[in-house]
Length: 113
Image (tube, rainbow, N blue to C red):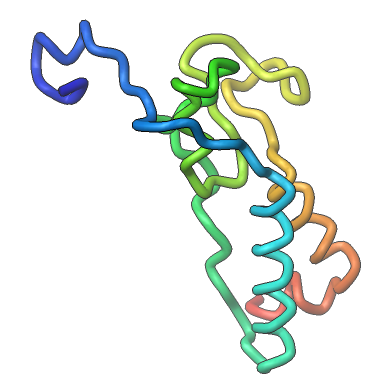
């Protein structure tokens, strides 16, 4: 309903249940997958979406659309994050995990270049 013209402006998108945000799980899944791909000899991989501006973060769990997204950063509908105060997004644990993964293995980070 929130996507419908006119009336959609009055309907706030929300999750259909109670879901726990688990950034640590997302970060762990991504780095484990990267390790498997490295071990298999894969040269390049598309990690995930960097940002999903439609899937915004909200402190209220019911409206935290980002909790169901796979982006590396959480975006804000209005306002800014604390890590990057000039931007409308903020790195999640997955962002830091991917950065750390490639920082430990510089050869993997430049394999596709």
